[in-house]
Image (cartoon, rainbow, N blue to C red; front, side, top):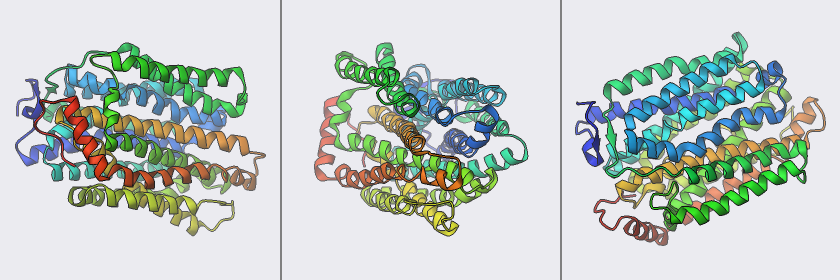
Length: 490
């Protein structure tokens, strides 16, 4: 296989099945790297707070600075890979992410840690959309592609399973800073394998940069997240918080007015005429907001209310992660065989049930009930990832499939950021003291938005898979690219 000559379109697809599997494994390493970082950092938040004297909002920003910046730059990362070469962009992202990890491990203050997390996010924004674009073009047969996406989702579960346990072990045995050292050997291995085995490829027609659109998207997401995170401390009516929401609103109007005028917009709003893609965006935001809020609240609940160590907290959440790891491949195969509706219905029902079990938890709630909630919630999350991506790209010509997948990936990160921001804001507002009972009580109101998000997943499961939705996807695909002869089947 020649790794030097850039190719485009289906020419980049390896004919040999072993080569395709190798490329899938290398791409999954990037997801493992990103997922490991998220869950390992979550379990270390109390230790970070003690060491750096960080407030609840500071801990929120430790998570949200990463997710907001990554969400803002994912579309740019995907288009950069199309324009400059996917392997080159992927390798650059791995390098930047690793450098950011080193700086995180050396951070002397909360502000320095947040800044290093931003650098990590810049690198991560070049990983997931480019990897998904590579996978989409490598696995072009619908059933094989759905199974590949299932493997992709399973790796996320494996990274979740490893993250809390390894993060807790390193935090207890060494220091929270050691968590970021985990990224270095994985990043180095992924970089070597990428340069060795992944062929270079580019889009046949590279999209032009859209700096105005990029700034507007950053302002929209940053303003919205900042307002939610800082409102409990500054007050919902304060000039700072109101100004953040106004900035977000103005940026949204700017996106809606400016992007349709662009020949190559950062975000082509015509995509949202496809009901499956629009529903996939809603599904991703709702499911990952629930997931982000669920993880954030449970980190605080297990360690600060129940008094578990970082390692024990990681072991407590491991059943949820293992459920995701074991069931995500099944979800991928089910999508390939029966379509996305059944997995999405399972996701909505199990997500609702798992969250409902956490309603009203106290410091003395029997641990088996909490662990059951984690397992059931994990079952729901296991079945949402593959159908979301498959729904987003279904019916799209392969030329637009990578962009559609990037839209879904961006929506995931937006959901994570909003979930942590909303859960943390409600927790801060409800917190009345530092006793275990008061800390547990502060989580009670925060579970209800998570329950609402899971209910939305259930509703959108029907909307995204209706006959009207399928017809709209085909119609949108023809409008976007009338000359395309090979749409991506559901």
